[in-house]
Amino acid sequence: MRITFTNDTEHRLTEINIAGCETESIAKLEPNESKTVWVRITRDCFIHVDYKESGKQRSENVAGYVTRGMEQKTNYKIDGENHSKF
Image (cartoon, rainbow, N blue to C red; front, side, top):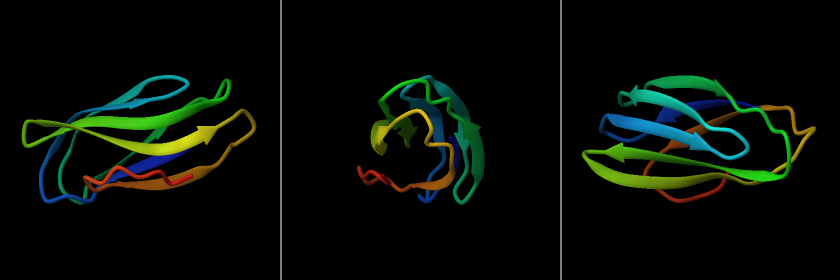
């Protein structure tokens, strides 16, 4: 699954960790900046993102359920809300 993460907040985001079937990371995203990561889906799992915004730890659900064969590309806006795209 290819996911493009966009910082939709007004603050720099740091220590961005994407977890689920495997773990990926992004060092930082400036406001309105985007970066794409590939997350390999090897089994049934979920995808969430943890990050720091202005020194505060935050977490958002990206996908509540993914499984093998869900090859797709998607965009996800990190906006400080805890929601799931799927």
